[in-house]
Length: 172
Ligand SMILES: CC(C)(COP(=O)(O)OP(=O)(O)OC[C@H]1O[C@@H](n2cnc3c(N)ncnc32)[C@H](O)[C@@H]1OP(=O)(O)O)[C@@H](O)C(=O)NCCC(=O)NCCS
Image 1 (cartoon, rainbow, N blue to C red):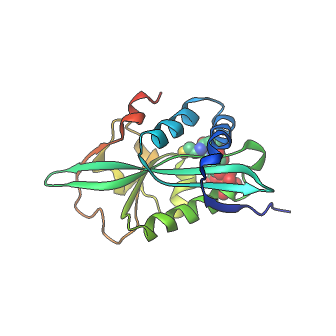
Image 2: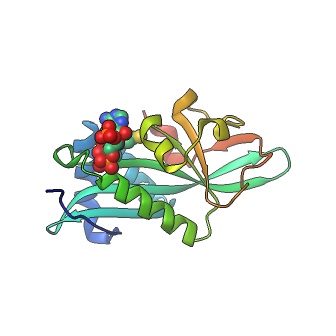
């Protein structure tokens, strides 16, 4: 039977558990440390935890970034990282985190989200590489670089360069 996860905002007491989820899911410290740096730097927009039987098994983070367009600067969100503990993967917990995460971002009035990730996963939620093509990223990404409009046409005619928040500059 599929475990029933509760999706909720992160709490101050979740810091170590979130670090651990990212560390184990990615098999590296880099993403876990990025989460701490984004939080400590004040760049978090939405951070949700998936909890089963009182333990964190998944996490999703949206942080602020800017798109420098031809005539204006647009506020947007970076979706990164998201992680589910290996033993809980492919049980739709990531789907729950992303669905609720995007609904929360939309409810907060955010208009667009950008992600560099698995195309086969994110396109199921409407992310599109075509939409992200006019948005130059320092990380490149090809088909893995995708955008989602939370408001219709929010990226219509937008051409620009994406400026990630400083913690991404030290991300390797
Ligand atoms: C990606 C991740 C967050 C998805 O969470 P999840 O709970 O396993 O996802 P769900 O069960 O809701 O959805 C499963 C779908 O995710 C995609 N997916 C899951 N793991 C994947 C992987 N390692 N590579 C590519 N796609 C993957 C597939 O489309 C899969 O569908 P399928 O089972 O029909 O093939 C999770 O697998 C994870 O933490 N992976 C390691 C860290 C990572 O890569 N994070 C994302 C960075 S972009």
